Length: 328
Image (spheres, rainbow, N blue to C red):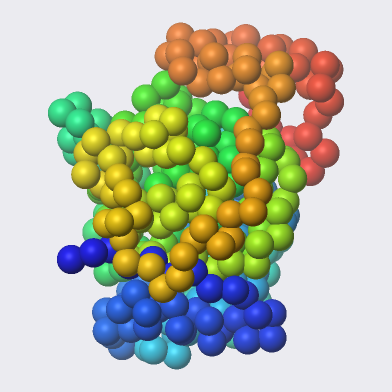
């Protein structure tokens, strides 16, 4: 059976209708039963809404409204920002989550505050262990991921698979970076997201995930398969997924189609790809990337006693983040 991906233009006046249309097209209405427990994982990689960086309150609310109207019990969850940069509660406030929960009876949960356990699976013949919230492993019927399509200075792109990185509750999740392709796919195998709802109001070009150039495309992309959704986004962004480490591994592992011929689409994604998305790394990005790929450098720069002075020096060169303060 072919994977299905819906691409539609967002109309600000009636976002809820396009969400309903998308769910119907991918055949997901039949899976949403009264009383079912659904977890939504938005991308809150910033303490407040930022175009092309985080999931918009508008798209989040529209999906919550549709799901609760169908009788689902909805959870919205995120972990604290890396290195204590901000709390999930601050990100919830910055994305109107308390108001959305109050209107529809949904509940917000900080994944960093939940009981957690080590889980393991096999990726490409390698045993991978990762710490995850017990709730997501045992108590959720349906996991829906809500990424924002963007380039990423460390991982090439940040799409549906990558969005589950934020389910690692440890604020020092950086320690998993050297094995990123294997760990991120292990997380997806363990949590088994069933649906991807991409907020393509803005895509992000140049230097994601937190900075860059927001590109207004006003697209809602919904897929019943994360790999198929990532493939379609790569097509729109004119990015070859074979050049992205974790996507190449996902194809090898059978978690992602190799061609759009394996995907059923409601419309041709080529009509939306007017612009080639290009990743432009700064010198500091290249230095960070070297650390990203090295277990020793990751420990030295992020977990050792040298982490704070090294980052203080980096901030002296490039300036400190203005909206949050990581603690090293």
